[in-house]
Length: 269
Image 1 (spheres, rainbow, N blue to C red):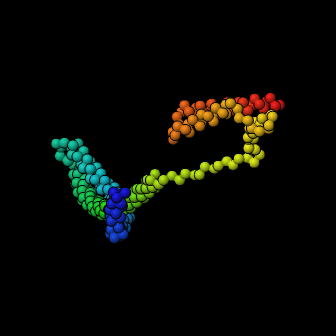
Image 2 (cartoon, rainbow, N blue to C red):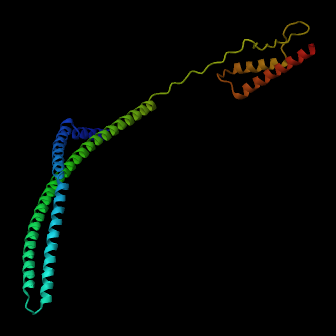
């Protein structure tokens, strides 16, 4: 439990309100940067379609001018080839002169179209670079935001896990303590209930000693006399504890008395 408490205190320190506030401020700062550069990227991206259209149009004009120059040059080359070593006529001279003049004009047009094309291309490239720059800044700011959010969530998650581990350790300690206290305390024995005798149960009748048929008085039998004699002898010896043999003799005499009394009762019946 001490280790769990130590981990909990460390997690609380790492995720203290002050440290979380620093992370939140960092997130807010990068969020502001992210929003700004995203806005700038959108602003610089907006003209791109129109600028691309200008490039495409300039490319078409340049291609047209270049094709005209190439066509005029091909026509001039054909005339000169057909002329060969012959001296050109006045008409051919005028035609060659006209072609060369048109070629020069076409070349100037081609160069102008090429300059326009390069101009539009450079503008488009510059615009795209600005968009890429702001998008890169937005991506970097977003990475910082995600990193700070992940860090904040990890600290809170560690705190929650440490709190759960500490609570579990406390619960286990309380359960172990309760079990130890229960094992150390003496068990309380419940009193055993005593069954009272039933009121219907009657005490057994005690057999009365047999009386003499002549006098009606109790007449001891020979067995009784023998028992008395034996008891008297034991008394005369002065022994504090009679031996087992003597006690057995007394018991045998008693059994004889009981048997004699039983026979007399039967005879009376």
